[in-house]
Image 1: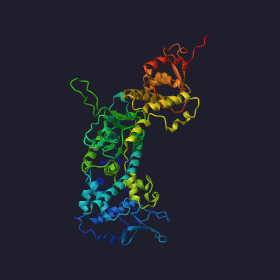
Image 2: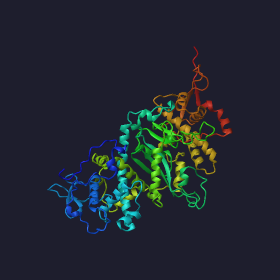
Image 3: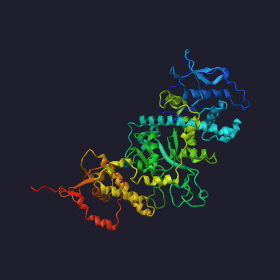
Image 4: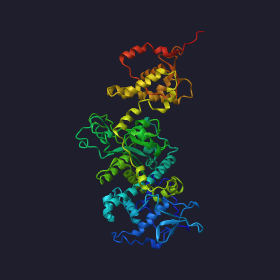
Length: 584
């Protein structure tokens, strides 16, 4: 184009899924820099930094300006067009190409190079070197030695690259989501019970595009950091990233959630725990419901949400008594999460170059590595096309004019570790009723006085530190069954009365426990129950039909002592209507 606008090459929407088709993007960000970069030739003269150890400063200056034009374009407020004309001897300015306008603005403002004082080529040089040296990372000390600048300047340059990477990871995540949705829209997997090999069912090309997920720990909290206290109070991965509660419970290590595709994009996220409320939103915005998903058995809450979710049991025991573990505990029917584990190995080797990274800045470092790994598979052409198509809004139009732009962007992408009080509050937040806005209709209903009392008793139970842990485990067991039973009932809400036996069989729930739970609900007027055991003479035992009376299920206690259980058996029939057959 005459204005020097960059026209991206036509690329396939599958480039980010299989990087083998995009070899040229693995060597450099762009194929060449011979295009018109709308900069006057005299502006490339750099008189300050001549002794740069043979670095082609003009090339990397062009590279930096091309990145700014492609990914952070500036718009004229009057003509509403991209500013594409340079200003002689002032390379940081760009102006409107309209002869009657000549609107000028800094091409560095409100970008990762906001208030950039170093020579402009340094940003492009470090970014290119980071991609070429992957999986090895370039530390701030190495930047300082290579460019002969102070450590403080090198550290700030490193943060600018991390902010740039964080901006692009958001676009890559959206591209990844859309392409997975289109690829697996009409693809079905064989049922688990069939025992068919998924790789043979889908084919090698489609099988390689399946996303894998896993979690890993970086910089574990050692016994020395806990003042020589052992981690006997907690278990799992979260036990190794937090200090002991008696020391303060501060987060020391980093817990990373990984979503990756073979030879494609990878996304690392710093998380405080492995709960569904933490990992669920990350999976939801990265992997669509239509896509298959492979993981280990650490994601049981994905059952029923992702219909094509498959897991592998790493603790599977062998049927042969000579061996402890089964030989297919890493991969069974071509189901594994080794793609995510392989990327975590690259992550650990990369982070070994850093002495230590604070959890607060962990997300910036992870975004940098995610971008470098993903752009090698996607390529700049595909990324620029996404910007041109409006996948992400233009930066220069959405950010307000502030002098603290760079500082605000660094703070935005920082990870905020949870304190001990916040973690303790989260433990009870999922099991208490107080403060839950969806239960306001129950609190306003004066007819449910007994339910209000039981809800308060539930909250007091979970806040009492003297309650034994095994009693709380039983309550969590009953609570999980109650939640699954309630979800199954609400799915059949189009029917006024729902047969309990059919729900229990279809949801694969224990019948005795389900009977205890629904009787508890009937006692508190949450549901209405009718017993048809005398109406249907062909069936024996209980034959309940249930009608839901409230919109949302509150948290309740279902565990009963022996005295309460025997006392309650006499009052069961009081809350259940028995439907008898009419005599003719």
